[in-house]
Amino acid sequence: GSSTKQDRSMDRDRSPLRGSGVNTKEIYIDDCYTRHVIGSKGAQIEKIRRNSGADVQVSKDDTVQNSERKISIVGRQSDIDLALKLINEAIAAKITIDRKNVGGGGETVEQFDYVNELLDRISSVVP
View 1 (cartoon, rainbow, N blue to C red):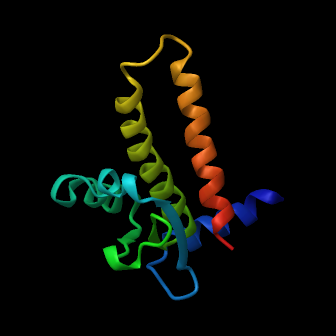
View 2 (cartoon, one colour):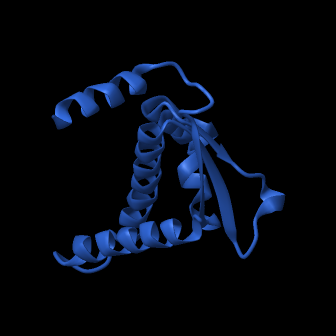
């Protein structure tokens, strides 16, 4: 019965944040996207924190290296995954705005490729 195993993991998921269940994931994004992740007066990052339940911390300006900025996401794995998705959506929205006045119908496909590429790059940086 695989169902019993699933039930157990769901119970664990509902438990309050404990040391064991909390993960930290660090990603690096192009610094030019930082302000889109943070949003106006921090509105976007606040939304990401609220929607994902994860604690998202953007590193300070003086830690930026090679124009890449570190973002630390702390929470349960499911919260982290959701935060990552929301961060990527925030960046994708920015890319869409940038490219809106370019080309025609094929544009969106290219744009999603770009976001996937970004995701790959983010994943590859993480040990």
